[in-house]
Length: 68
Image (cartoon, rainbow, N blue to C red):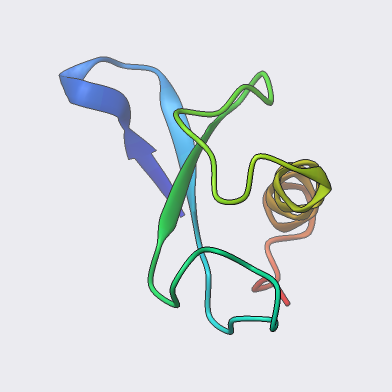
C-alpha cells in the first residue's frame, strides 16, 4: 500500500475509487494519494468522501487489512 511520492522518501497511500455512487463525479479507477499526515494530493470529490477516504487509509495502515 505504501509508495514513494515523486521520488521522495515520504510514504503515501494510494486510494482508488472502485465503484461510482450515482452522485460521485469521479469515475471508477480514479486515485487519491494520501500522505501519512492525512493531507492529499488533489481530490476525488471535493467533499466529505475525500475525508472518509483519508480515514479508510488510516485504518488500512493500522490494521493491514484491505480497504472497503
